[in-house]
Length: 425
Image 1 (cartoon, helix red, strand yellow):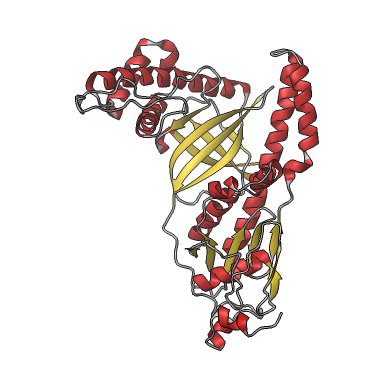
Image 2 (cartoon, helix red, strand yellow; image 1 turned 180 degrees about the vertical axis):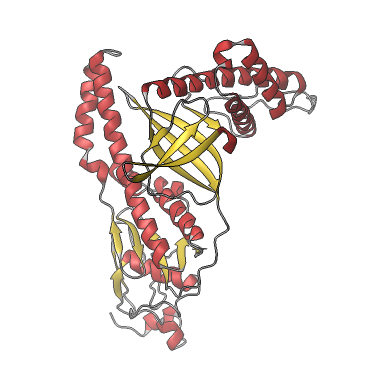
């Protein structure tokens, strides 16, 4: 299952219909939240999707504003409500809320009156609706001015909708289409997210080399081929400009035209930073997934890495690197290309010497690995990549010629302590 997100350009009439569908689905969403609360507090169970669909049908018949919206989008909203309720009822409460202590006298079948439900959506906070079936929309290709162009035909939206992304092909059976609206301050941007089902990926038999990928803040990614992708720290580039705009915003009168103008500029600046980060991730992940058949990565938690952040500059570096998104995109693209991804234990991969196995403690500020036992010198991240290849059992088949491919402890059958004992540094 894949999803293609593309920006769409709407006319004034099409924009009115899309905005009306979004607002009508917002009314239905809030009403279904209320219905779920009533049913849960009465029976202790959530209503089914079928029950909410019947409620949506009654609302569509009784209210002309809701009835003029596309009917099947209300069914998609009912599924959305059920998922939101299951997530909030089954997950953790928000900070500041105390969990009621259970006693022996309480009946387990009695509904929990302090259960947490999703919040109601005020105007402007609900920004999407979904066409759940291919019968409700279609992708149309027409030739205009000598070129084939891709358009969308959406239910109750007059005419054809122009699409920006024309190069990405939709190869598979189309399933759903979600129309999203993004507030940019003085105007809105509209996107269409089309989900389609593809054939299972075929195992790639092309003889490509394996690679280990070490992610971090100084280098977004470092490969065992000694190629590195430095972190350009895009937030640092726009930090002064962003701080200046935020000072102007604090002095402006809330809700005034000048306030909205400055807020619009801040939103665009944040959008520019996010787009730059996403572009870096897409370029790096595409190159790695395309050129290597086996990709070795550390099985680490990005949240754990952020906890060891020593200052705000380092935290901004983690944000610019987008390590969690990078790992996800590499895994997704490698799976689509039929390549394998191996996750290894991240403990001491940057501390051990890949040549002799000696543990060389290093602080985060030390970027070069220098072994006091065997004298091996290498970049810290590249040395970590070699250790990852050894953990994955691929050190004997890597297509490189570094001096540390065959560890000394395997050649002379000595432990790292015995080697250090006989080495003079």
